[in-house]
Length: 429
Image (cartoon, rainbow, N blue to C red; front, side, top):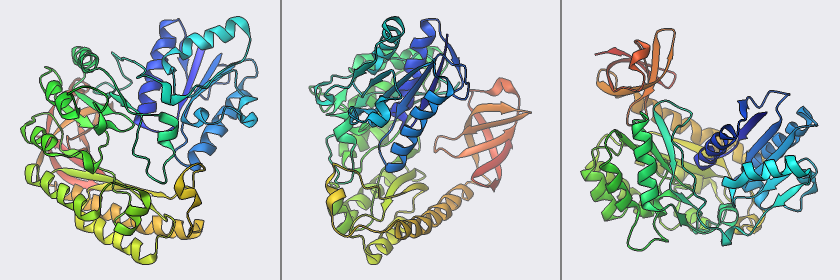
């Protein structure tokens, strides 16, 4: 039997889908493309972080049913977690769960195949424990995701995620270490630690936090790079900064959501810091790692965001001198405080502000790339095609250079010659 999997959303979803794919393969299924009209099972791992995510999730569920009316259509994730009464979805699926017990989705699928009775197990996510998943091989040859945490309790006023992912749950430290040790033995040089609120790892453990885990991971032979998918500025405490200072493996790239560069908007968002606090932490990081690439997320067009607030954000983004960033228009999510706020901006206003801020980030990113021209960087190649290797530096600069396929997954010194369209071009030193 053939199974096709479509994943929307974050790195946590990517990790979970990878685990599910491996479980299907263990049962004798063959993985096929989601464009294959002859798949026996179509699984959609959904997302609901924005209205666009909702639309894509709904679209892919319906598309799966149209592809093959005899196939089993399975849906799980954030979008389905809060839509157990949505007939516009339920009429298209055979098996549907939320974010609880994703590791059991293969069992549920096979139960449907056996009994031919629709399964809808959408349970209270606040009653969930950490859903243990472990991966020994990933879909890339050099970099592997490791999910260490689930859930969020920040309750930012715009965000639906705490309601669909539940409270903070951490993978047991020994299980994280065992998984990373296996990945190292299987040839992976870089791990990416991911979670819904990664830096809050350990909040539900006794006397053990994210910094403790980082120190333990540092000791694992074979892993050359430790990358953090995203971390909140409030989690960069002195303990973390000391770990960063001592580490030989934590990379020179860190993603820290900003969301707004205006204190007025940050307060409305229920973020737990102001811009002065944010900048102070960035400066402390750069005292330790002067060439650290700091990237971020910003939401524009938040309710009551004035032109002055937006211009303040632009100036703050320039002041921080980010190496790049993602810009999102505010998405009105039912069930969140921000959805009821006065001063909702029009779609056109949000579009104009998005375009302006993206231009600023593009300029900052280009400047960060170009300052490395003439230097020699360590690159781990990930792809090979027609004599050209492509990989990333530890500060996540994309680099292309000529070389042989045998260099895949190995550290290579590359002399950087020029920059073209968000890529550095160089030659083996």
